[in-house]
Length: 350
Ligand code: 5AD
Image 1 (cartoon, rainbow, N blue to C red):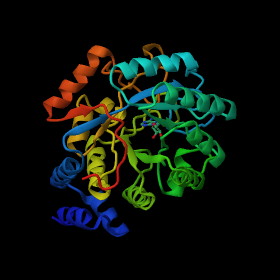
Image 2: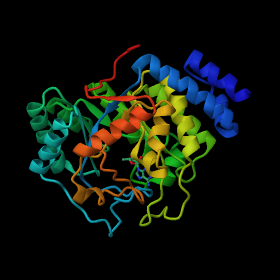
Image 3: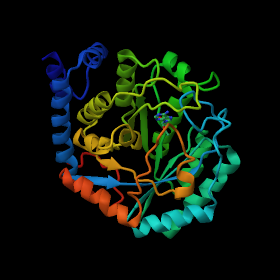
Image 4: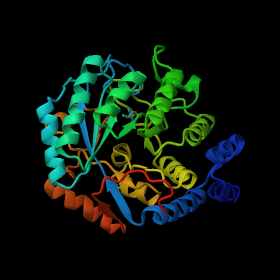
């Protein structure tokens, strides 16, 4: 009962007190999750109807200078086979994606240095001139404000940078000492300030996560008020320090998706690949919990396996020509349809 009262308050006020978040996130029951999902679906319906935005994800390099303890492409993982797609290969992915109807390309890679950033800026400009009706989203990690400005001037529209956890002590348990939550927050504020449609987010069930740290995540999200929020379960990777740790819970991930939808109403909320990896219908369940974006992988098959952030990452082939209709029919089966517009964030787009 207490859960339902707090969820109603969240819908009404768009916020809860820290203590209320901690209570809701530590004592929630199945019925609270069902209730939140129902409200979240109604909110989604009001703002987006039954439309699901589709983004083509291109994982163009797994080279990374960071060493995050949870991530399979961390620098110290000697077993990772490193690759970087050429400009031509990436443009071919975009071309194939464009022909399939994709109007957003999400370029993601490990965190690379200034040389790669320059190349990426050139690539963004090329994609935007070849496909002026498409949006380009970047997900390349922490950069200087100047570098973000360079990407923006090159034509990038959006930037995804998960904050991972909004509690500094927890952040330090997930990352080496050279990384800091303060810099991550600085990046997110710069991105928003520059004019990117900006996405933050976190993993559910990352080691050492608590109801308190989750409460901080939600409070931070509300304060940043991003255009997108990426939430997926933590899934261990065998060649990382977190090998053998338990994966995050499907139910808690779905509950958090619903709560974020109820709080931020018109936010863009993907049903993530990690959710689809945890459960065969994870992404559909995500949509039924309030998500409104899916991001099929457009990367060439040969490199898909090498972009291994966690174990058993799915590669469904839903992105291939035949697969696109498979995705469509899976969504249709739960009452939704994909749209091929850019799907920009819109204020009060009820
Ligand atoms: N499990 C789930 N998600 C992960 N990510 C990185 N490693 C893992 C993992 N082991 C997520 C991080 C990162 C995004 C690109 O992938 O949240 O921001």
